[in-house]
Amino acid sequence: MHTNPQSGSARPVTLLAFLFVVTGCPSFATRGSARTMEAGQWEVSASLGATSANPLSGPSIQADGRDYTYSGDDAYSFWDVGVGVGVTDEVEVGGRLMVTGNDVFATSVARAVLPSALALDTKVQLARGDERGNGLDVAIDPTVTVGHGRGGGSRGLLSFVQVPVLLGLNLGERDQLMLSPQLTAAMPHLGLSTKQLIPSLGAAYLHRFESGWGVRPELTVIAPPDAEGRHFRHATFQASLGVLKK
Image 1: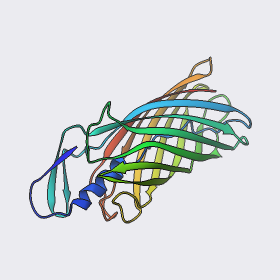
Image 2: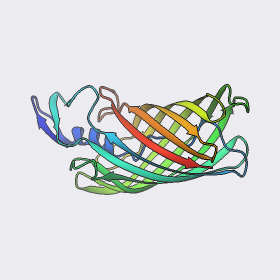
Image 3: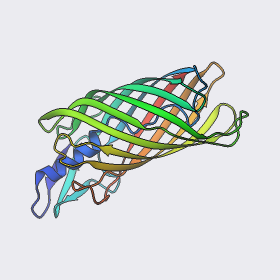
Image 4: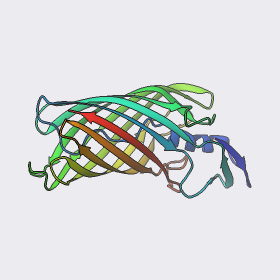
């Protein structure tokens, strides 16, 4: 991604901080469904997706009174593999290994890249529909992600704490439409001197086949803050397609 200044005076670190917030996160995608698995049940999953670093409001961003225009490729890809297991009928633990920044979709040099990251989560059921596939499932899924990355010539440890709320509307025994409002805390790293809070909203549809396999597309809108973490002027999105097997 290249940026061209239009007016005013700016500190480059402000724009770089915005880019790190947008592209330094491995994934805003959630894992599985809004219903925890039964105790002792296992599930494996894999997904492939891409994140756009170009704001939905247009190809320009204003930082410190100066306008910047995006040019070049403004997306990066990611993939992950994961596993989950039911500890009790209301508690599920899991983990995902993720790789991001694949140049299949991205050639931008001003971006943060996670060659590999590990995410660990604990899903807790708050409400559950009936066993016939009716009603609403509600769960929270706190997740901690750590990995080693690089961006803008810097290298270091990247860490994120994510707290999604999973709202799953059951459409029969094998289908679920899910919304996932989420708050992500990006710990200081690679040009960010303070913690950043990033709100997002995801929508996913899960269909399970009789064989136990499932397919799960997901789209998430992300609203990263400015470098000072006080304003949310821009939004971007992430899309992924996953498969899973119980």
